[in-house]
Length: 486
Image (cartoon, rainbow, N blue to C red; front, side, top):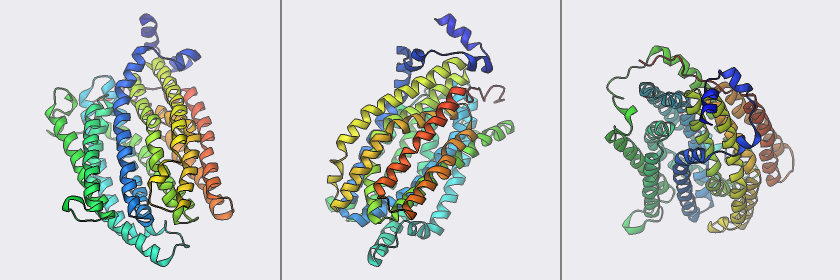
């Protein structure tokens, strides 16, 4: 077996792509494969699931204040989502190189990619702050439908702006955390990011209780209290992940000498930026697409935003398994590509897809069972609870489709095919999903639940495209071979 793998590893990319893989070896792996995946993915799942559970509790707390408060937070969080995905996308370009550098044990290369991340993140934070300060009111106004009463519209705008202006303080610590946590995950070290995130969650939950409702003598600040709690938790998370990482240089060797100079080889800048820009644009356009989809649904009333906020919050908890498996795909497959184990990388990609889709049949069933229970926790109208239940069930139905599309995206990205992922992800969102949602929401009388189901079902087309691209092996390549890092 080991001799076979060694022979396969010696193959060129062209020959490796032509190697026929059996169905069984693509679907079922050895124990060593599952142990490796578990080491990477379990801390992610634990971290993100707990984070989403705390997010749900936060959401329920804000929901106790009222429907307008919940809608206001949902609107601003959708705008914050655009910023966060821009950070993730921009850092992912350098992260592709970082993963493959780590795969070939080139720590100097990992340091160079971190320096590029720091510069890129600083630019995005400055631009985002300026945009939110100058155009925040305009952006928020797009989510308040014309049918909303003047009093409700004014209150929604006031609450949203107050929440947004406080949340701006959290942009910089969030970006710094993602630089460190992302690099640690790319190297397969996911425990510290998990610990820092879990600590931040506890802080966020405690201060939400204190500041939203005014317990233990703290001021009762409502929506503003929720924002302050989030800002505090962001600084806690940043402090833990950066301080602990730099105090464990033996464990995280690629951090040694990170700030002794800020030198980046000129030969690396263009290749890294050529991968960074498509990913940045993809995440920006995709997140804007999601914001536009929500805005399209919102023309059916402010109640739809509240219902989708409930549905998305609970769905995120159950989606976390396949989302984490997707992120793990880019790490596991990317390291194999960096080590030039091309046939093994192909096996791992299909196994990750199988694992991700199978997990969704379990999580989708559990989500369906919870669909009518969770909305009852909110202090809102019965109409909104019923809408939320319908949205949750739709998410559960399409979950396997989302899972396969997600793994396809990260598989393509692991090999540096960033322009292809740009076409596959954000272009599909804008040319298919947004167009269909816009037409159905604005120009038909189809109920909003039907509109949402139709748009979600379009993911089947995306899965078909992803299957073809992954099967063709266009992503099978080493992008750091020959890269000078010294």
